[in-house]
Every structure is written in C-alpha cells, then in structure tokens.
Length: 335
Ligand code: NAD
Ligand code: WQD
Image (tube, rainbow, N blue to C red):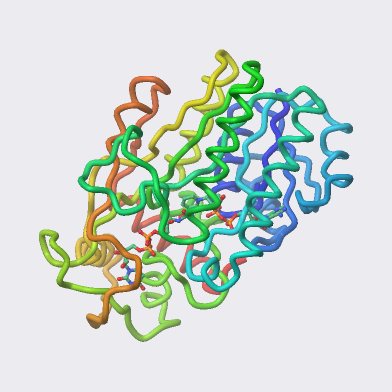
C-alpha cells in the first residue's frame, strides 16, 4: 500500500517512515526541506534497508504536489508538513497561517481530486490551551494561546467540515503531547536549527558541551517540585501510533481525535534527574523567569487511543533520555 507522507524528512516524519517501511508500506515523501535535511531520508533507508520515493516539493505549490499524486497510487496520507515553533509563530503569524493552513487546504484539494480520502493529521496537545485539570481527555474544551496553536485548531475544524460535507473521508487527528528521544540506532533524531526551544534538545546540547547550562523556566508552579510538568513521549511510540491510526482509518469512515501521550507527567527537574541517571552526565542549571504562555501541568488521558487504536506508549523516560543522548553524541552537529 502506498502512503504519502508530507513532512517525512522531519523529526517525527522520519521516525514514522522507518516504522512504515518496516511494516511493508511503500512510502512517498513530500518535503521542501525547510526544516530538515535530505540526509534524514538517506538514513531512514539505511536503517530499514528499504527504498522510499522522495519529492522535494512545497505543499503550497499545487502543481508540484499534484505530481506526487499523479505519479503514484496513493491510498492514504500522513500529514506532518508544517511549521511548529510557538515563539516564531507569534512573530510571523502570516507565515504560519499560510504554511500550515493553506498547505493543508491545498493537500486536501489534491486528495479530493485523486479520490484519496484517508488522512492522519499531526495535531498537538496545544489545542487544549490552558486546561482546567489533568489528565486531559479528548472531550476537553479546545482553545489556543498562540498562532501556531490556532493553526492546529483551525485545521482540526477544517477537517471536521470536510468530513461533514463528504462522509467518505476518514480522518485521524493525533494530538501529540511532548515527543522526545530518537531512534535507538542513533542515526535519526531531532535536529533543531540554532538555539533549541524545547527542553530535551537543550539538555542534550548542555550534556555534549555546546551550551553551558539549562535555564529552568520557573520553579514556583503548583506542581510537586515547582517546575513545569509535561507528558514526554518517545518519538518511536508516536511513530507507531501513526501506523495504528492508519490501520483504523483504512477500515472505517469518520473523524476522530486521539491523544498520543503516556499519561504520566514529569517535571523539568524529574527529566534532568532521569537524564543524569541514564547518561551519567551532569546537567548544570539555573532557575529563571517562567516562559510566557507556559502552563503548570499538561498530561494526557491516553485511554481512547488504547481502546480504539490498540496503541499505548511502550518506552519509559529512561529510554527517552538514553536515545536522545545517543543521537546527540553520535551527531554533535546534527545531520
Ligand atoms: P519538523 O519541523 O521536524 O518536520 C516538519 C517537516 O515539514 C520538515 O521536514 C519541513 O521541512 C516540512 N515542511 C514544512 N513546511 C512544508 C511545506 N510547505 N511543504 C513541504 N514540507 C514542509 O517537525 P516535527 O517535530 O517532525 O513535527 C511534525 C508535525 O507534528 C508538525 O505538523 C508539528 O506541528 C506537529 N507536532 C510536533 C510536535 C513536537 O513537539 N515536535 C508536537 C505536536 C505536534
Ligand atoms: C517543556 C517544559 C518548559 C525549555 C511545546 C509546544 C507544544 C508542542 C510541544 C508542538 C516546560 C520547560 C523548556 C528550556 C525549560 N509542540 N523548559 N527550559 O512548551 O510543553 O510544548 O512543544 O505542537 O505546542 O508549546 O515543550 O519542551 O518547550 O517545554 O525549563 O530551555 O520544559 O517551561 O515546562 P512545551 P518544551
């Protein structure tokens, strides 16, 4: 079965391509390499010993994107392509709305034209905004606190409207919590440009000596140790969740959101301790001001994905730390 993966050269996309190829799918990647390198796809093929087809294409370019549909026999799409940096989205909202929303609209137009109506979409726990309580279930009210989050919320609404207008569609909306870690081979992983925004890549860069110390953004939250609590989940578990979602949408019609999280929350200090234990590296840190827009606690109720998709996370925080570290030491400067 041929699967189109938009954004397949990126962090989560590349790990998902590995799982797809290992499970016997034929993979067609469309990526404009705006936040990734061709090398990641080379390594995906090296890890799996299988070939994938790559189009260096911007999904905003309808005519180019159409080639991927006309030249292949695509049966379903996994849609990762988009921009994801919260701070950047506040500074460049037009860029974010255009890339994420227009890109998805163009993709859906092409899908409809080629009668491909099976879609797995990368959403985010960010659509829960400032949740009133934890753990967060899919039924919680949705809101967003920044342009990036609003693009995800708007795309979810657009997909609901598409399904409402044509009941042949089958869409899985996957709301990821905090994906971290890397493939256990240490060959593919997260490769941020410049200073990392996210906790784990910052920690690994401190551990490898690229940065002096970590700043912990706030230590007065109402959590067990005062630092922010998140549901960190291994990127390979996230990737596997896509295969389960794909199996589901191939058999059914409808549109459903699913949380992809572990259901367990770890604080920033917990992550540091676990990283130090897993790797034997010391992470110097200072406490600094809370980051604007951050919430105290965010973790999933993952029961819906467990019961309906038959998926749950298998890897623990030690695996996440060790695998993130292996990727970092093997690739100190990324790809
Ligand atoms: P990433 O930046 O590593 O991957 C996104 C890929 O999309 C990149 O390879 C980029 O080059 C490509 N891309 C962007 N715009 C494109 C366009 N117009 N045409 C073609 N390709 C384009 O990000 P990721 O961490 O792998 O995230 C994948 C998806 O999951 C994104 O939609 C992101 O918003 C979502 N998500 C990520 C996280 C996270 O923490 N990483 C959490 C929740 C949701
Ligand atoms: C985790 C914790 C920080 C960096 C973001 C997006 C979200 C989703 C996942 C895409 C928080 C603390 C961080 C640092 C720190 N992405 N921290 N020092 O903010 O939960 O989620 O990525 O959809 O939309 O907002 O993840 O890794 O940035 O932060 O203390 O240098 O680590 O305050 O408590 P976040 P994160």
